[in-house]
Image 1 (cartoon, helix red, strand yellow):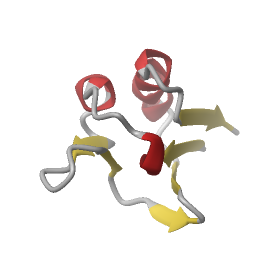
Image 2: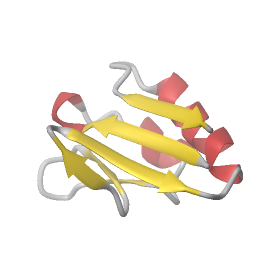
Image 3: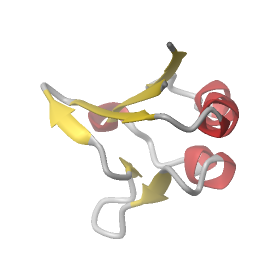
Length: 76
């Protein structure tokens, strides 16, 4: 199980997450910020849980590339 979390309010719209993990991230046309697809929002944190182990590698690359460190990825 892979858990990915995004603090969307702090996003600066650099687009790295959408480049490294396009199956999980998109850039909003409304405000230019990242959107974590199929996520659930709770207190400003957008989270998804996915059973696909492949998700860890692409989302981890996105998290490491993020200049404001608002993406976290955990494998449980």
